[in-house]
Image (cartoon, rainbow over all chains, first blue to last red; front, side, top):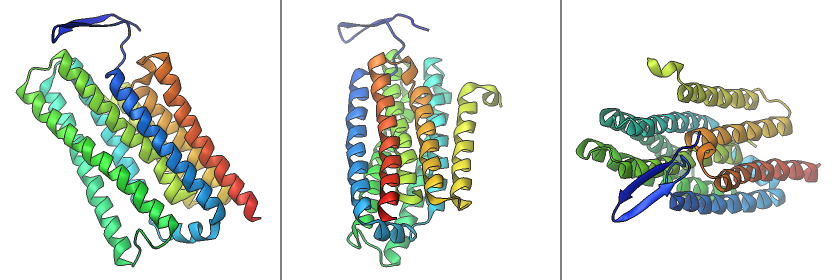
Length: 199
Length: 91
C-alpha cells in the first residue's frame, strides 16, 4: 500500500510517494557494503578452488555450533529491531527502548560467543597467518564483528534517545536506518555461516 | 503474548526453523555437495526474507528491491557454483 508522507524539517520539505523505510543514503551505504562482501566471497571461492584439501581440513577445525547459535541470535535480534521500528511508528517509546535493549543484549551474547571462539582458536595455535583459510576466517568474521559492534552502539544510543526525546518522524526515520544496517549485519552472517563453516 | 499471532513473529519462527533444517541437513552427513547446496539455498531464502520483510525492501523503490535481491541471488549463485566447480575439479 502506498501513501504520501510529507513533513517540514530543517527548513525544507521532505516528500515521498512511497513507504520506503530509511533514507536513500543508508540503502546506498548498505548496498556498497554488500558488494564489498560479494567480492570477498568471490575471492574466497577462487582460493578454495585451488586449495580444496587445505580448506576442507582447516574447516574441520572450526566449530559449526558457534556459527549456528550466532545465526539464531542474530535472527532473533533482527526481529526485535523490526518490532522496535514498528513501536516507533506507534510513538510507543517504552516499547522502542525495550526492544532495542533486548536486541542489544543479544548482540552482546554474539560478542561474547565470538570472543570465546577466537580465544579457543588462538589457544589451539590457530592464527590469522596459519593458512589462507584462516586468514579469510579471521578477516571475514572480524569485519562482520566490527559491523556488529557499530550496530550495537547505534542500538544503545537510539534506545536512550527514545526515552529522552519525543518519538518524532525524524527519530523514526533514523531508527529505520539503524534497523536497515542491523538487518544487513544479520543477512551477511546468514551467508558467512555456510561459506566458512558448512560447505 | 500478542506478538505470537503477528507476522513478524511468524517470520522469525520460519527463519529459525529454516536454520534448524539447514543444521540437520549438515549434521545428517548427506552427500557433501547436496548438503552444501541445500544449506546455501536455505541461507538465500532466509536472507531474502530478512531483506524483504525486516528491511522492508518490499516497500522500498523498485530499484533498491531489485538491487538487494540481485545481491542475494549473486551471493547464493557464487557460493553454489563455486562449490560445485571445486567438487568437480577434485574428482
